[in-house]
Length: 128
Image (cartoon, rainbow, N blue to C red):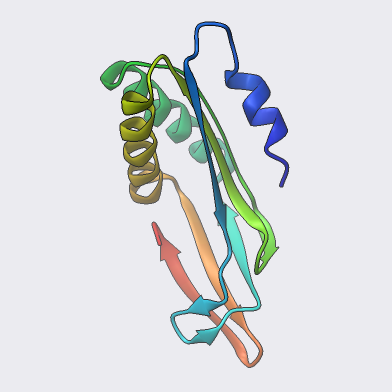
């Protein structure tokens, strides 16, 4: 997953900093060594919930813009599954907003993941 588009969405002369978050698939999983993750989402609901979360973060923190993309389908270990870019005037706000944004995404985005292993797979569920 490419992150350049996210940076393009949030850059501007009004931004003093940009935080770029890349969530990647790691080998260690619930039941052993993960080969890949498989993500599923209810597209219409996921996009609407992302917009609600972004609006809440923009209202609560002094940030300017947010861009996000989450992978769907198969994502191998080492690859990126989520890209988030947040622009703000100052770093304090962008760091606080980034953590809050990811916490809300984990808690609320209608997205489910399955860990795939050499000998099978395990559904982890939403928010993991």
